[in-house]
Amino acid sequence: MLIGIVFFYSYPNREMTASELLRYFRNHVVFILIPYILWSLIYEGDAIY
Figure (cartoon, rainbow, N blue to C red):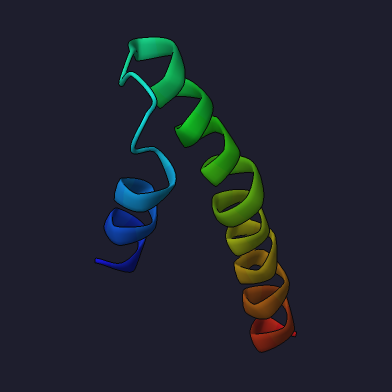
C-alpha cells in the first residue's frame, strides 16, 4: 500500500509508459529484491551451519 502511495505522488506529471514502468520496476528489483535474496541466503546459511 505504501509503495502505491509513493508511486502515485512521485509520478503525478509523468506519463505512464512502458519504459517508465520498466525503469520503476528495475529500480525496485535492484534496491529491494536483490538485497532481500542475498540476506535470505546468508540467514539460511547461518541457520543450517
